[in-house]
Length: 346
Ligand SMILES: NC(=O)c1ccc[n+]([C@@H]2O[C@H](COP(=O)([O-])OP(=O)(O)OC[C@H]3O[C@@H](n4cnc5c(N)ncnc54)[C@H](OP(=O)(O)O)[C@@H]3O)[C@@H](O)[C@H]2O)c1
Image (cartoon, rainbow, N blue to C red):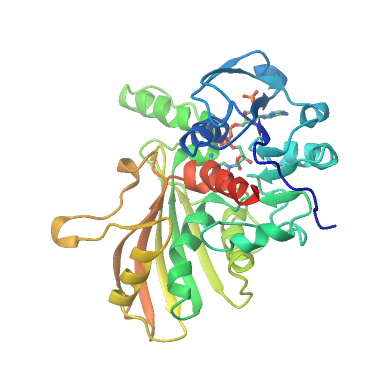
């Protein structure tokens, strides 16, 4: 059923999963964008109830500390926008309570992304899709977001037939505990100690792991599947073929992606560069003479999607190759979700 309630100019915002990697970033982004909130509620599990989180303030909420409350179905009474990053299970559990309270859920998990009545939105690509939500809007997978931000300006020149993407995904993509594991394992490795392996299937220190999320029947991973189906949904093109290989690398923050893109019509690297330079949310960082290209280790905390190594891919008739980096906790999660929330404001 289409949603008719208008979000007020100064909404009450709940951050569900506020103590996590994405949740903490939500608080940063709400401040950075000066989101006009009347109130911000920090919600997490019972383990965190009573914890205090520093908050720099936004809208009508002064800087100070937010006291974390245990998330229950009753937490959403009076809430207008619920920013969710507490995992798919929690999102599913809370959906009914959130919608019944009249709040719009903007969900970072994979719980609802492919449901027909749930828009999957990247504001630079398909902002118009927020209009048809019925209480839930999904934030795409982090790897998909930065890819489509870079692809959209190129698609607008000539449609894309096929993309081959290999990702280089940061440890923090698996949450705060996974980021800590990269630190501690690196230290253990350097000290010659036994490695504690918990967050990933194998050691992540001094290693790369071609395995993110679970394996599917066709031997691809669910992360790879997400990139395939989410890209088609966001770009409104079921014929857009995507072949993905997703790899975890020992980087703290920011995913890198190598893209080989095949287009229907002719497109030169020069045309692509101009389109990318003009595109919202994109920064072209591409000057090989000066060894300039985007690198994950140097871009943590940024908002834009960075594109470099732009060149012709001579292996197909109309091909380009490019390298894309974005901070997946910001543009791949918290920032994208708050930008969606901005689209809901009157
Ligand atoms: N990390 C990324 O780059 C990224 C990017 C895009 C999307 N996402 C998605 O965002 C979600 C969160 O990821 P994350 O990386 O922020 O994970 P995280 O660092 O592990 O944080 C998880 C958060 O969920 C809360 N939580 C867990 N179980 C709960 C429960 N039963 N009830 C209430 N709260 C509960 C935790 O609270 P406690 O501290 O109290 O346990 C914590 O605040 C996941 O769905 C993930 O797929 C993550």
